Image 1: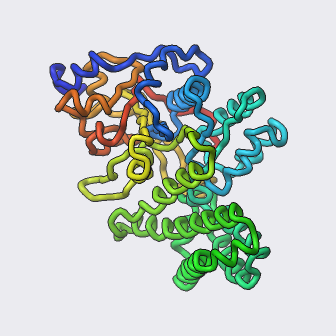
Image 2: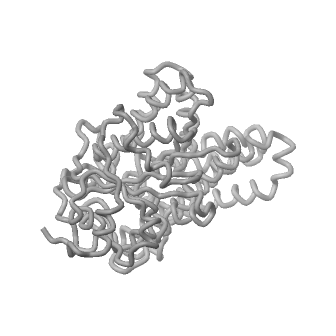
Length: 425
């Protein structure tokens, strides 16, 4: 197995300072996680990542970390890589609305990225907790699969506040319905097959509605309340960012896209986190769950080409040390490779792929050289205490090259990863 030098300063630093963890089990005692309290400090938003979706160990760790941050550190919001607009019914459910069985219907059309168990825990916790833990979606509608979860409530708002615009939004909904799918992997190719006149009409309508929303804010505010206006505006912005993302993905698939064009989705995710923060009680702290590629604080590049500016980078600019990015990765094991298949419910199938050995210079290689198993390293401390730092971290079955101690504030590494079983993919 290729390794970095056993005498490398970063490996030695890990041996001296990494914190071993005792459990994966979300129900296990939490005492081994106590050092994390000091590592995150006073951060208002703690983001928990994963190098790949659909990994069993990462799902267990997220649930355990959520429990620790809520029970021991006073966090009261779970935010997830899930549609902003669709998140409100889940928030109501998590706070006790409906029956336990209703969650299945709420999540019936969503990609199973590990949301069910955390939400079930939050609902159980809220039966005796005060204040309750809230849920917040942050993503573009349907993770890029459809604009309708945002446009439908915007249309309801406009019917009350600005009826003249209803024909416009209904036209946008008609076009959006013609290519809607369960995920971006379904919708983006279907969008690309639309006539250019339909594509351009949709974009033009959304842009006109957005400018009108912003320009007529005083009128809208007098016809309804401020919260309804802010909510409808952010939903409309989600539709606009979703529409832009279809164009960006089409360019990416055709290899003729603009530099960093996929940043539109992450920009909306960051703004959604800030939208919630601005409207929650002062001092509210958020547990934010998303892929490593969304939470990291350095740009994403592949083969030397700038691909995007992640949500984490934008949140760090807005919150400074109030944002904390905890990357999850694994030394060995398996990853879930996503293979495009438009006939599958979500536009892809999953492959169970064995991970290659850690590359020299990787954070996983350093953990292996240090002889560490399950453990967490405070990379903020490493920035000032060692000059030899890893320059890459796993991203599904490959590596993304980035200064890891700048991209993440801490990293939690498992010895191995396994693909979750019985997924509805």
